[in-house]
Image (spheres, one colour):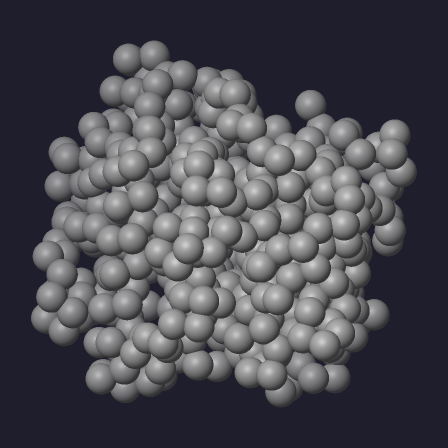
Length: 478
C-alpha cells in the first residue's frame, strides 16, 4: 500500500505531487509536499467524500489573516475568527485538508493537553496556577465538546480509562486519582483488574485502572470535515496544494509565497503541528521536536472475537507505559491501537515498527492474534521541550502567532487553542493569557543550544533513540 520515495530538500516535481511520501521527515524536508495524497489511514478511507475547498492558490491574493495549516487547530482558528470576530481568514494547506496530524491520530479527545499530569503542574507552577490552568483546559474540553455536538463524527463519550500495565504503576494512578478528585474536583475512580474486565475490557496487561469522567472518542477526519464546512459557510477560504515556500515581511505586511502566487496578509497564524519545518519561519526554527506515532486498525471483529477480547465499552484507553499504547473499540467493531514508532522518516516504513505494534495488540488481547490488520499508518507528533503546548505571539512587534506543542494530546485542546489564537489575532485581551501556555514562547532547553542547527538533527535523534531504549527497559522490566 505504501511505496518508498527518495528524500527531497525542495518541492517535489509535478509528476510526484499526488504521491504520498511515507518517508517525509520535518527535520529533513523543507516542505511536506505540494498537493500530496493522504496517508493510508482508516479515517481517510471511512470519512466519505471530503467537502469542497477552494483549490490551490493560482494568483496573488490579499488577505486580512492567513492561517498556515488546515488541521484541527488551523480550521478551528479560522472558524472562530469568522464566528466570533467577523474576520474571514485564508487558510493555506500544502497538501489536502487535515493531511497531517489531524488525519493520523487515535481520535481520543481527553480533558488534557501536553504530556504533563496535573501533579506536575503543581510541582512546576504551584497550586494557584495549576488550578487556573485546569480551569482553562477544562474550558477547552467544553469548546471541543460543543463542536463535536455540531458535527456527525461518530462521537463515543464515556471518559478515559488509564490502565496500569504493571502492579508497580498502581500507586502512581492512585496518586493521580486522589489529586484529580480532592484538588481539582473530578469524579475519578480507581478500578480493580476485575472491575475493568467486568465493565470495560479484558486487557491482559491490566493490573487496575483510573477512570476519568471526561473524554470523547471521535472520527477525526469526519470532525475536521465538519470544521471545514462550518468555516467555509462563514466565508473562510481554504486553499489546498498551496505550500508556503517563503515568508517575508515589509512595512508590517507579510508576504507568503506559494507555487501559485503570493498571499499578502496583515497577520499570520501557524497551525502546522508535527509537520512544522525549520525553514517555515524564524519563530518556529527548532521549537518543536517531531516524533513519530504508529497506528493500526483491524478488520471488524466477529461477535466471538469481541467477546474473547472482553470489549464491553467503547471508552478509549491508554496505558501507563512512557511509550504508551492508546486503543479503543471503534464503531463497526474494529480495534484501533497506536504507540510510538520509528525515530526518522527514512526508517518509518520498516516492517519492524508495525510488528512491534501488532505484538502489543496480541499481548493485550490474545483472542485477536489471528485477526487481520486492514489499515496501518504513522504520523508526526509535535512535542515541545517542556511537554506543554504554546499559543503565542512570540514577538509583540510582529503580527505572527502560533499554536503548537500538544505532545499527542491535541485532538480535544486543538479546538480551544484555535479559539485562543483567533482571539490573539483579533487583538482581544483575556485573563487566560497570563497562564504559562500563553505567556511564554516555545524554546529549546539551554543544554541543547549547541545543537539547534538542522545540521545537528541526527545527534538529536541519537539522544531520542537512547531515551526510547531506556523507556522500554523501564516500562517492561525495571
